[in-house]
Length: 80
Image 1: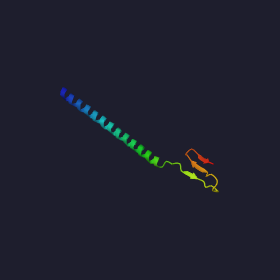
Image 2: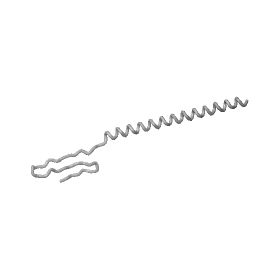
Image 3: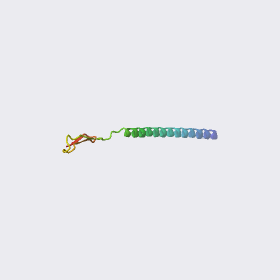
């Protein structure tokens, strides 16, 4: 009777250990998948991030200083 109880207890402990291992592995895999999706999304969003483009206005005559206009991302700057 003692040996049957010992075998059943050992089988139960092994089953619980295996279930905990499977649960931990699946959670780790899910976390890795979420991290991969966030990383890929961040990389794609960085590609489409607008960069400031300098723009120049033409001077009306050759003797005037050229006016510079650009947008630095916080507002338009006009240098007269």
